Amino acid sequence: MLSYSTDKGLTWTKPRLIPNTPLQLWSTTITVVGQVLRNGSPELAHLTDISRKTTLELSDMEFDRATLTLAANARIKNTSKETLGTPLKARVVYLRSDIGRIAVTNSDNGMTREGAVWDFGPAVKGDALLLDQKTEARRLVFKLSNRSRGIEAAGCLVTCWG
Image (cartoon, rainbow, N blue to C red; front, side):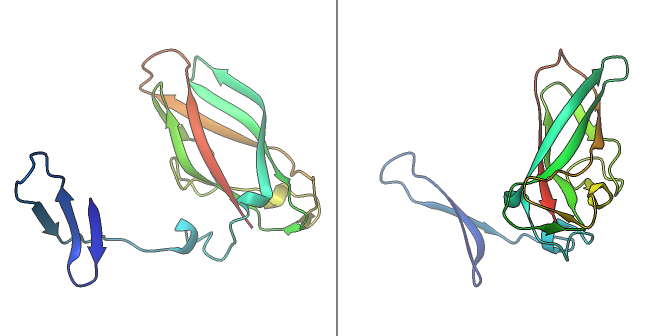
């Protein structure tokens, strides 16, 4: 069991496997180096998470076995009753494949894993996305490497920010 207190720091205990034995307790200090950023990115820090107000719709998916490239057209749909303005960005927060290492190849911020961002603002007709409106399509492209077996499963979770 892990616990944290400001005076003792992080501590964990090991469950008693043998009855009537002493409880074992360990503690340590953990230092995290890095920046804490709202929404995980400087480019998203001033935006609001609108994932619950949108869906990311994929179509025209293609897999090129020769280049191990997976591509799909993506549109963000406004599923809320609110009008959503720009900027409108999508960020990868989870990316995995059961068949090899997967990477984003065409993000707008140059990142290839979690944290990759696509800007859908230019894909919005006018300056806003009304109820049930969709952006124009953006092509999302992924590359597989270290392929271990046939096509089985890939997962990607994208959040939207506006």
